[in-house]
Image (cartoon, rainbow, N blue to C red; front, side):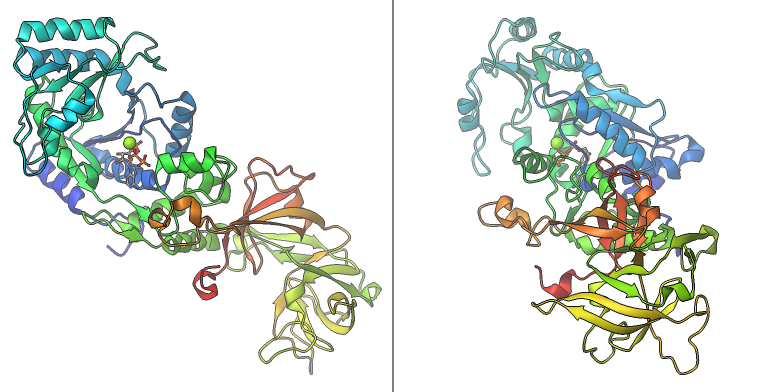
Length: 561
Ligand code: ATP
Ligand code: MG
């Protein structure tokens, strides 16, 4: 079990193993059933990793995971979402093969099951108003009151249901309810509505239907029709399981799926509900569904989170029955850890100050050779141009160096990463006391060589050649919310947006960064991980980089800016 990439076993995997051992199923079949009414987020990634992961782990048995669009509600769904969901599942590295389904293809089957329930005396048309139905449902201490329609004869129910389907009624005039148990302590069993009238156009079936099944009714039927063995959902459906089982028992279904619930993923500093994410998008609080500050998979992709890190994170947090909130720093740790191994290094200066190398002509090198990764020689080396003027980070110079500050200061030495040791010979300040220019000299012959006798040089700093470097727009992203639990904020999550969640600055970058393709991900030496923006970065013309994650977690220390 020491391999961190192999999934930890959990209670769901144990149930599946037991079912297989008992010969209940030849192979597990799971499903990921998104409703196409928004973009996928990190919570969905947890569900994707679980469902597709189980199928992968049983590949020798030809296990499968279906991608099923739960598109039974015509009002909120759009094709744009279907495409984005497919893209996101593939991006995480999963493949549904030929098992792509749309619940809307099963409308006739749902209808037939409803007719079957009516014929068995287990469903009736109710024409009470919604308020009447609510009032008659009772509460935890009082049983429900039967609707005057509850004992309607089967033939009349069948005729009315056919009329509902034929479009004779207006929305809300009547509904189909399952006849279960008005005294049940589980409110979900008190004759739930299973079909309602909606005169709405559906993206798949057009105007063919004007009655639509409710989720609790449709979902078990979808699972059964697809021969799903284990239907994995989040804990809020635990109370719905008796209803799920009731539909499976009472409808003419071809298989008996089993629903198992697990805890949903919630993260600190993060909103994880499509409805709320939509509010952020529509309210213009972010630039779109793929804003790099959002927990949407399209957002974190644009932010530069590698899918491998997300999958690893999902494995690490595991699957439990207990809800809790996971520290978002754990995810950031995985991102940093993955990129530390995989991301090539480049040089950029975010807060530049110019250094003039006064004796440059003493060693007319056109470039120095810099390794692309400090531990991975197979990543090669690149030629970084250098000339008599370079940019360094303002914080790498101190006029009066503090103890333990080993970088540049008056008469001090520092190494230019991959290049020479230089010595500071002077500096200029403006009226406000800001350093405007640093003068230095190179120590000839020190490229790739140890410090000469008597020269103390204990640090290497990154730099960018002024002649060949260029400006880039760099977007420094931070947490979108100021507080750990934005959902609990007084006045709602919009009240606790972090005003500093995006800072844009102009940085100096080396030519390799200017010319990199959109989506190029790397470490800016000593600063953090960055990615060339998928939309706005134009290689060679307008470089735009997004900060994926800082090199170190500085959040706690700064006390929640
Ligand atoms: P949201 O609450 O964000 O609207 P949802 O549950 O309505 O999400 P669906 O499209 O219905 O979104 O979800 C598809 C699948 O993803 C479901 O099986 C659901 O249980 C699962 N899922 C959604 N959110 C999470 C989460 N935070 N953690 C784990 N699984 C989740
Ligand atoms: Mg939902």
